[in-house]
Length: 241
Image (tube, rainbow, N blue to C red; front, side, top):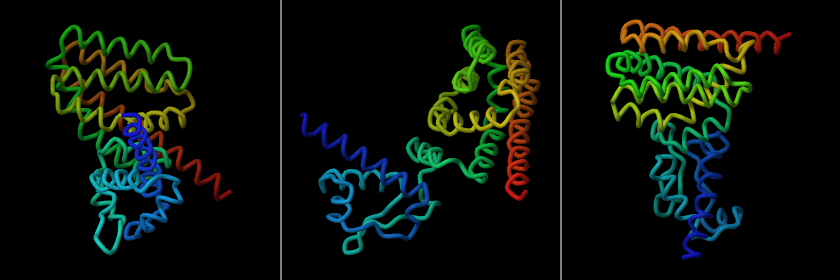
């Protein structure tokens, strides 16, 4: 049992190491990974642990193994972009502007509709969860506390939709959204700048006003995007000065 657990721990470490290299761009699509014995030696693991790690990366769509060729890194279009590990690796390598823009686009598609559904269907208990998260945001003293409460707020809104598929989707993209919320808050003069917008969403859900909730959530997302774009502009000006 201990030996099996040790192997699992090793292949998990190897999987994350190789996954970060691939997603972070250190290993490019089309590249062939070193031979098993060479790669296992460089990572200081057994070939058994390495093979297990490669199987998982293959299941995530990052690589494919061919007899006589070895493991080749696949193009990004084959990656399971909503896999929790793949998202975490992208966030760990610092999201590019393109990745952040795609997160915004995904939020624009999902969250306004979720806010409207929550306003139609929420129970008293679910409203209390959203309110609790809002109060935690209001009471936050640090950026980390704010981000945790912000995630709790959006999670509670999706929970209030009564749609299990939306709830599952949030759990998958939670890491990426957490990074987005941190970036947005960090680039603002006051990390609590979006608190009034969250309050508008809360009050619309409280009053069971679906369209008001939809518009308030859309406005919140658009404002966070504008804040990040403004920050990019300042950074470019500073770099060219």
